[in-house]
Length: 116
Image (cartoon, rainbow, N blue to C red):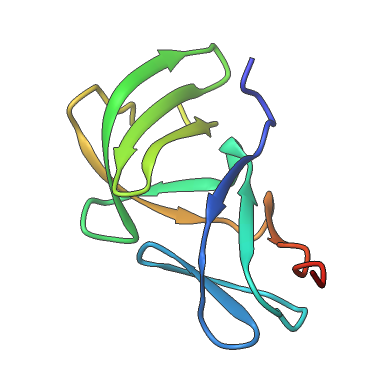
């Protein structure tokens, strides 16, 4: 049961109010200090045409009745996606572009190093 479980990704700082995850830039309302990670729920990923966002290739596709669960191989490693649309199903081997919705994405700041 992956449903709703967020995956943590390491990100690069992109100015004081954003981080970069591969080709994607994620904005933050808060000022970011130091290292951060981003927690992304499977339903936050949006599947678009190949050539947009983060390039991914489908390695697994499972039909759930109310949608699909996909695993994409990407430059960031495998990404698990819960997709509510059943019309345009993807098959393993197909390429797509992944972007992020506004919901289900949380920037997690690494705790500051404790003084030694």
